[in-house]
Each structure stands twice: as structure tokens, then as C-alpha cells.
Image (cartoon, rainbow, N blue to C red):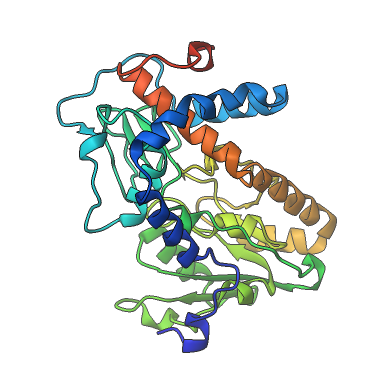
Length: 334
């Protein structure tokens, strides 16, 4: 169990109170108000510089890869019937933030949670496999209070400990394998935070701030993506992980090993060699940190993120035969 002092440490975390206060404010405004604003919001794309428009077009068509019109089955849920579930409330609110701008008669398939397989029909998801044909998995930025957390790290890489730190739930086979290999390694400070199995690996909980004392932070995927990857890449430490297999709004599939993070083999066999290399070559480590920060910057513009989210949805409704797009060239150009 976390010590009380660590449970109440909210440094480097998104503010839950502000998030739910904003959600409450949405509920007080009629849906018709949001729908009346959609055309103006979508038209904002044309007011941006050409390089920004190009980036937005890429991201829209990365998240939503639907290329042909696919009508949805009768099991799709109409937006007017899309209601708050007993669980996964954050997924609902993050979806509703943007669906409220569209015709309430439009329908969609909503798959909440850690989705690791591509659905049979076009569906709105938080996560999807990177490889293969994943077009039916249309990504929205869901559960972002937990996942989209960027931090300010005032500690220099050079002054951090020459070690890899990792804390996490260790249940899945690939995480167990890593702990089997490196739990007692002198370059590692690893700890399991769950009980029930391999309790000899349990160590004290570390806050994000305590992780920042280390040059290297472990970012192993869990059920889908590594939840901590966003805040690690916004820090002055290096994310260490194999090439990712799943992706979210963060576009993990576009990350480049040894440019944005320290890439280790899928079997973890070169972990010690990769850490030692960047300890001995701090200039190259600093380049990775800068590239990671540059990558993070694209997600920090709230108006642009809103615009991309709305356009991803507009393309979804267009490619499922429910509307005509504001600009067909935006979605149909090759």
C-alpha cells in the first residue's frame, strides 16, 4: 500500500478536480449549442500555416485509416443513445467531448478499455495493434487524464543516477521475463507494486518525482501501451523499451528507436549494453531527450488537438456513410 505522503503527492499529475469540473460544465450546455459551432471549428484548419495543416492532415489520416465507405451494422449505437456507463466513465466523457458536436442521429461502435485486436467493424478505440491492417480501429484520445500526462523536469540528465528505475504491475509474461532477468542487476532499481504472485519483487512505491532521480526509466507495455511513456519522454530521463506493438493517440507507431527512446531487443538481452552506451555517451543521450521533447510538443496545443479530434470523427461518420465531409480532399487524397 502506498504511504499516505505518496498517495497525496499530486506533483507531475493531471488535475482530477479540474477535469471533472470541466466535464460538469459541459453537461449544463445544450447539445444544440455545440452542433451550431461545428462548421466554424472545422473551418479553423484553413486559417493555419501550411506546415501546420500538413501535420494535422497526416495525424487525421493516421488515426483514421478508413479508405472506403463501410456502412455500420444495426448494432452501432446512435449518439442520442450514447449514455454514461457504470464503469469506464473517463472513456465516455473523453468521447462525448467531441461527439456532442455531431448530429445525434449518427451512430458509432464504441470499444472502451485496452483494445489489442482490430474489430470487425469500424470502431472508436483508445488503442490498437501497430502492425497489420488496423483501419477498423479508429483512435480517439481516450482516458487521457491517466495516459496523457506531461511533466516539467528540472533535473539535468548528467546529475541523475546511472541506473534504470521501474515500478509497475508485474503480471503479464513479458514483464515477468524482464524481472526474472534483471531484478537483482546492479544497474537496475526494479519493483513490483501488485500482490498475489512473485511477492519477493515487491518494493516501495515511487512517485513520478522519485523516478526522475534516474537517467533511465523502464517503459514496458502492459495490457496495451506503456502508460508512463508520455511523461517519461517529457522528462530529462530516457525511456527504455523494445519497439512498441500497440499505439494510442500518442502515435507510438511513429516513434523511432534510439531517436525518441532507448530501444532494447524484444528478448531484453542487450539491456545492459544499451544503458552502458548512453552512460558513456551523454551527448547522444541528450540528443534523444531533445528529440523526445520535440515529439511531445505536437500534443501540447489544445485547440489543435480539438480540431484533429473533430476531424477524425467527421471522417469516421463520412466513411461510414452518414455525412458529407467539410472538405473531401482532406480524407480522400493519397
